[in-house]
Structures are given as C-alpha cells and as structure tokens.
Amino acid sequence: MPMEQLLVQSLDELTTQIDTACQKGRRVYLYFSGSTDLTTGDSWSPECCQCEGVLEQAMKGTKEEDLFLMVEIGDQNEWNDANNKYRTHPLYQVKQLPTLLSLSF
Image (cartoon, rainbow, N blue to C red; front, side):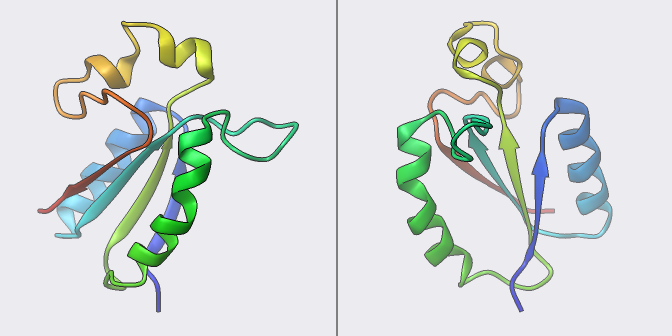
C-alpha cells in the first residue's frame, strides 16, 4: 500500500501536517511545486510537470507509514518574489522548483 499523499496550500497547513507527523514518528516527504493552473490542471512550472513521472517511480519505494506532502508555493509571480515565504523560511529555504525534501522524526 502506498504512503498517504496530501495537497498543502498554505504554510500554516504545512506546519500543522508536519507537527502531527512528528508526533507519530513518521517520515515526511515535502514536494514543493508551482501551483496548479486551473485551466490546464498542471503546474505552471514546466520543470514540475516533467518531474511527475520520476516522483511516481520514487514513491513506490516508500513505506505505508510515510507521508507525502505536495506543497503548492503559489503562482509564478508569487514564486518570483524574493520574499516568498517558502524561499525565506528558515527550515525549507526553497531555491528552485521543484524541490523534494525528506524529514525524519
């Protein structure tokens, strides 16, 4: 059975999910991606779209108790802002998209 997968659309929601996973001792994978373009159903970032197949293959090697959080960082204008909350966050410091982080508790 594959790991649980959730879409996260805010920093507060991300913090809550990580705190809950930490209390349960779960490994958490954070995938930072450009937000979904509602007209196409895909990320506005071509690099994020290209990465989907690789992610699907990599997720096959995870454990059921692991947690995968897809974090939508906003639209292209939000991402290009040097003060983007995910760029400046002391833990995440996202420098490019897509970014995959693994956290163990």
